[in-house]
Length: 262
Ligand code: BMP
Image 1 (cartoon, rainbow, N blue to C red):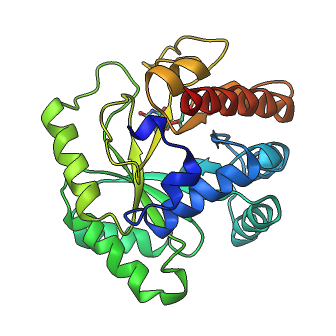
Image 2 (image 1 turned 90 degrees about the vertical axis):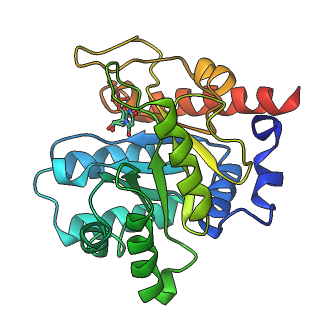
């Protein structure tokens, strides 16, 4: 069973993509399966939170198009932090257009984002477009990848069982560049070489007023089968984001260890 296998073993599987391997390895090196979503509104706040949470994360997730004042220097500093503190950067753009448009959009992201997200609604061709861009940048071949959204955490979303099944098929077809799926249930991914990234984690709240639904770290790892958990407001809105990141990291990692130990 995927959820019972250790990251160490999953990183060694032949089917595991280079980018998924890299995530497993960073996670093991830092004993962290925490991805922080830094959904702040200015570049200064982005860099401030990034630096504070950096020692505790395996992935830093951005919605860069929602942040004011982002320049090349901001991106450079973020990349510098990623190198110094050993984490990956994921731009959560959730691209969803025809292959050619996604290809154009991705050309602007490939230079700095290790990982991007896409919706599967337009089918496999957008992944073909992304793959073409990665192949054009030979030096990035083993260090770029995609997470496909298979389920959403908000209530009222339109995703159906059929959509989820077809999304998994696309992920398997493009496994060279797909690191995993963004989803909410343990039974979406069966292949141990794909990672399950699950948002909607908060220790203090159970929802917001716009449909977000939260679960605890142990629910998300044990019941929902997440490999990596995404925490946004639970950390960046805390009065001490560094300490909050540490608390989430330890709770998530200990729950992962508990999951693979029995
Ligand atoms: P928060 O913990 O503050 O609710 O943030 C969750 C983050 O995860 C946001 O960046 C959101 O865009 C993202 N996300 C989500 O909440 N649910 C999903 O199903 C998919 C997401 O990417």
